[in-house]
Structure formats: structure tokens, C-alpha cells
Image: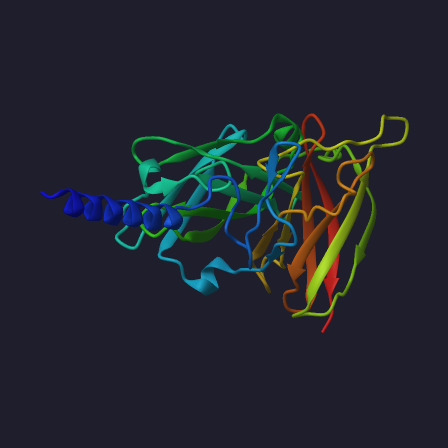
Length: 290
């Protein structure tokens, strides 16, 4: 082979390799947003300046995957499977890393006690993914109905896949279910509440009275996350958001800003997930108007 031909072949291989790499999912930021623009602050890559999230119903979008999920009899965890159209479970090597993990599980407790946790199930060779509930979440939990949403990226398609399911955690008699939240929501403002509009939701957080000011730590490539859930019966679905970096996130008692294309009118639950040395989840009810 002549030097010229060798050069042309190497160039073609390099170009094809570059195009293939561009199709691979990002290893830090999830892909459930209108735009993707990670930024670096003090050497840490954060997901998204003004990324607008959208509300999705996995069943309505009809992804070619079915989620099966069940809790363990011990009530401290459970397992799930992602079944393709052929009924075969997806295996770990078929999923790519997206936003630092291969599989993201959003568990929302609908009855018994309001609650939400973001988990990352661990795979086994037969396609079963196992998860453990945080001790603080399982302790004193009265049980009830749960909604489960998963998002992941398949290596073959390089596209986000979504699936949803419901599950029941055995009921347990408790005198008064303990709160699953340590910090507090001091304020929540909205640039608009009108359906279909792009809204900036700003949530100011604080430590309980008598404790040092709340300071956030990075959590999965961001200074926090938020998930919006619709009515489990009338409007099932969710939106996963990363905060826009407006400056108020870094100080004591921070303000997190989330940009969202507002879903249809109705009541929604916004769960804000933060890390102040340990993970915490805070609930912000939202009413979207016509």
C-alpha cells in the first residue's frame, strides 16, 4: 500500500472513530433535556446551565422496554428487570454510563407516607438489578403504593430509554411515620405557572433552626437534582432536572434554580435531592395553571 493510500485509510478510520464517539452518551450528564451544556466550576464539571427539562410519560412514549419491580420481603430493598420486546432482560453490558451510572431508579412513595429516593441498582448476570433502600427511608416506613421510573441509555441506540411500573411495599402499623427530611424549604418562586411555558423554579433551602447553615456538595455531577411527579392516576410521568448555575447555589442556605417546560394543568410534587454531607430529599408542591 502506498504512503498516500495509507494516509487516506488512517484519516478515514479517524473520522469514523470520531463520529462514533460523538454518538456515545455523555458520561456525566443525563440526556432528558432540550439542550446539554455542562460547565466547569473550580475543576468540577456540573450538568447544565439553563437546561430545560421536559415532563415525560414513559408509557405514552411507548419505549420498547418493560419494567418489572418488586420489593423484598425484608422491606429493605428489592429488585427489577428491564424486559425487551422479545421478553429477554437487558444485561449490564448492554447499558452505557449516563450521568455517572448505568441505571437510574426514581422511587416515589404515593401512599402511606410521601417520599422519594433516587437509587442506582446493581446488576447480576441474569439481568436482575438489585437495590437497597436507605436505612432512614426504610426505618418506620408504613409501606404502601410506589411509582417506579427508570432511565438508562442502551449501547446499541445511544438514546435514553424510559420505563415505569408500580409496586406495593407491605403495610406496617406505625404510630407516626418519621419524617424522611432533615433540612427545610424556606421559599419557592416561579417565573410562571402557566402550562406549556418555560418556567424557572427557584427553591431556597435551609438547615433546621439551631444548626449550621446549609452548604451543598456535588451530587452526581451537579449541586442537586429535582424530579417532578404528576398525579399517579390522572397524569403519571416525571421530569428530571439539574440546577442552572446562577450563583446562589454556592453560599449558605442556597437557592437552586430549575428550568422546566411546564406540563398540563394540575398538581405536581417536586422533590429536590441534595447532599450536605449526606443525601436529603425535600418536597415542594406545585400547581400548574391553564
